[in-house]
Image 1 (cartoon, rainbow, N blue to C red):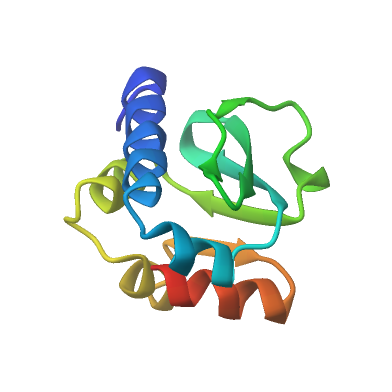
Image 2 (cartoon, rainbow, N blue to C red; image 1 turned 120 degrees about the vertical axis):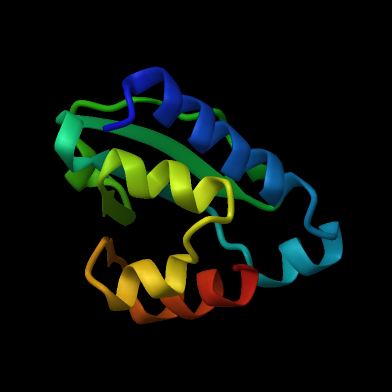
Amino acid sequence: MANEEECRAALGRVAARLAEVDADRLAEHVVERTISCRVADLGLAFRSRLHGGGLDPFERDEDPGAAQVRLTVDSDDLVAMAFDELSPAKAWTAGRLKIEASIFDLLRLRKLL
């Protein structure tokens, strides 16, 4: 099981990867949204804000259910996705990644992944 620091580093890596996306492509598909990532096995949650400039830094969140896009994943799977050892699509189809969002947000996110 990954620890809190490894999860923070994984989320930072995801944010950095999103920052590498072409600015025009990002602006085309991104609408400002709050995003929470609940790390189920550690009982932790983090929150960020997605916008045309990328992702804000993730911070601890006590109310992950209030975010517009909500992800739930175990710590090891989060780290594996951040390091391209597990694709988000495979994690989602296997039930290892849960995503709660509107259909429009899901379609936008899919284009960025």
